[in-house]
Image (cartoon, rainbow, N blue to C red):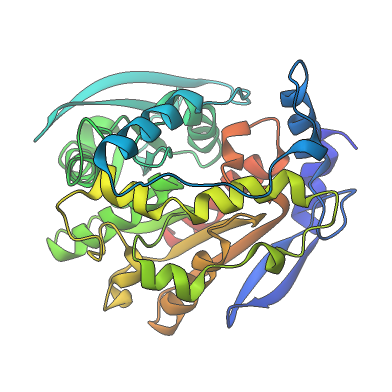
Length: 372
């Protein structure tokens, strides 16, 4: 099945399922059984192994973690993680322009990339996007084609934010940068061609955390700029108690025998990363603050309408379910999606994995519903 056929299959094949006491839309992948990797992802993994001594059968299922409570050890690990990040993807957009601007923040310049349809003359909604990378890595380049797709499809003005990273700039630099860009977009909405009352925030992984942080900070500041948030496999807590309570053991993912060697290292590694992030990113800040652990927000009714998406073999899947459940209980319009056969960070392969384009389409659809 080719890319387009697989994308169409995603849009017409889904199940409504119960996970962690809440309803999720489980989007089925073409030519894939439950517990197996999506064929596009499997092909990508096999390609990554070409030319190395590694094989699927040799992939480790247990990972011994160093002492991440030590700042020097955690910093070295974070910089090593940063060096491995980044993925090739494809620009599927047509007629989208890119502008580069600098926003002044408390920690220095915040570069932003701004995408819009070149022929759009009317005011349109805005979506501010924060890239993933564990708060220590990632770049706007990795998510650029994803953002350009949304700018064309909605259409919208999409702002891709190059916020400051730890360990060089520990918390609260990243959330403050991200909130400052929200203020800048609202303040310059006319110049940007944006409807000031139609601003959304989004991000993937750590960027999803930052999007939720911005939504929270927006309500705390009573600016009320954010009308929608799309959280893509977000990291929702840095609290050990939460992780012990909600974290799924590898067996709960029901991966097939062939799939376990491919997904176990990523799941186990992510399950073990909380201490590293607290040490290298949060530092002296309170990790229980909702800007670092959105699950800790006492009043979740403050959040705007939310799309939350995760993957079948993502260590953060259970936390997305719990957050969706608590948002709904608090009266927040929430749509929760799980993508069959996928792993964490799948939007990095925009144009290669159909699920990446599908979740962009889901963001577009929900923004249209929210910003009628």
